[in-house]
Length: 271
Ligand SMILES: NC(=O)c1ccc[n+]([C@@H]2O[C@H](COP(=O)([O-])OP(=O)(O)OC[C@H]3O[C@@H](n4cnc5c(N)ncnc54)[C@H](O)[C@@H]3O)[C@@H](O)[C@H]2O)c1
Image 1: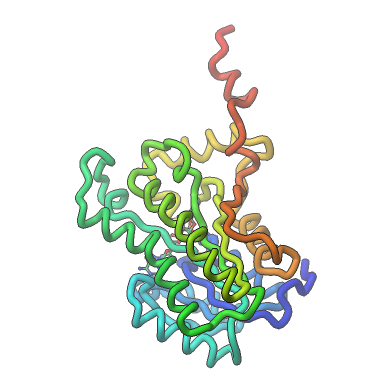
Image 2: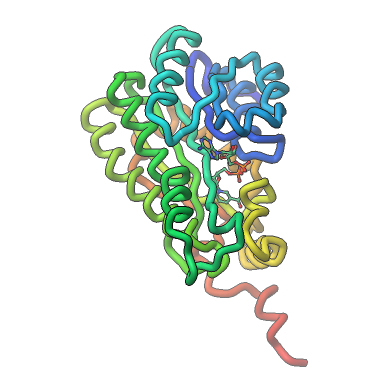
């Protein structure tokens, strides 16, 4: 349903790979709410071609950018403002990748070149994006920047591997950069800590099927879907949340505050 929550707002959406991507759902919903945006993804991801369909559907242009490369980000931010006709109101960072996870390297046996690559893609790219926006003074006052994260930043999930550390770093960047963006440009910066979600990145985590089921049974409201995550992100892009900043916001059906649920307990009670 459209409330025109984002009417007149302009932005950049990173990370729509295919129709399961959280960024894909967000782009569809931002469009529904009257926002306009540029879509971006790493040049290698473009080869899959699905993003063209999303661009067509939402009347958006695509600007490829590797989010670890400053020159790509500078080009993206400059061109996005030209295309959209002014400064930006919202940015979604929906990027994550661990080479150690992809190649099945255990957390206790890291290849540190891969660790560094994953850290750059999953965490430092958020700093690079914000620094580029900041230096170009590309955000409008009361704009909103959101990145997606996972609770392995706070608690142990053994198979989440080095992504846990990357997410902790990402959340810290949101606070640290959010301070400067807030005081100097009145822009808010938050992370949304989302439930396990069946996407390409999500399913890359070992044992994902068990993991998502466990989280679902442990949550008071069940897992939050990608669609619901998109809805939540809209509220953070809207003018209804202007003083929410420097936060890590759990969007997980209550999972993060659970000790145990009856459903999970029942599995351990012997008849
Ligand atoms: N799926 C889950 O279970 C889950 C849970 C919590 C948080 N998240 C986070 O949500 C975000 C989006 O992931 P998703 O689940 O929609 O999966 P996804 O695989 O659809 O999206 C990840 C995106 O990152 C992009 N990317 C990778 N390297 C890049 C680079 N160098 N430059 C630019 N883009 C690059 C990929 O092309 C892809 O579009 C990630 O930050 C992820 O960690 C996912």
